[in-house]
Image (tube, rainbow, N blue to C red; front, side, top):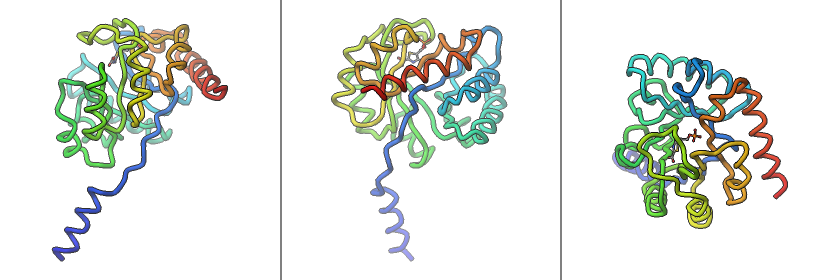
Length: 230
Ligand code: 3NM
């Protein structure tokens, strides 16, 4: 019995986990920049446009309100086969059985978060420099955020824009998936894609749009055309 359990434990740790595939467009909720629409409205628009991954990022609501929204979002994302990631809040991610969490540099260390959420869940980490990217990769992140590529007002207290050079560095030196983020718009997305980004997060330009689902569809088409032509 002891041997059996030990074996299971060893298999648990050495089993290779397949690399995550991030979709071309990574969606993030942004209540302040949503023109009065709720987080649920935004998620519904994203799903309508066939966005395949949605991160719930909410800095203003109470835990209670966040939990209520996340229960609903879990329902919607499960029904539509959409990956659901919760920003920062591990408790809520666990309670609603989200697919993963996204954490920043000042949150709990990756190995502790892994212990809490288990090996089958996704851990994403925001990184702003080569050393942070390397560390996240070594510590077992499933993907990293790379940014802010351009200046942004959406995330407060983030470092100043790191530009396209950092993105290029990640493309050359990091082997886990990455998503480019920060100040990216339909108008400047080509420069980001030319530096090797296969996945892009656009926040305010999507959530502020009058017709979110059409905008999302247009951006997805643009990214996928570019990858197809390469
Ligand atoms: N994370 P917008 S930048 C949520 O660099 C977030 O880690 C960033 O919003 C990072 O597309 C950012 O409106 C905000 O600029 C991105």
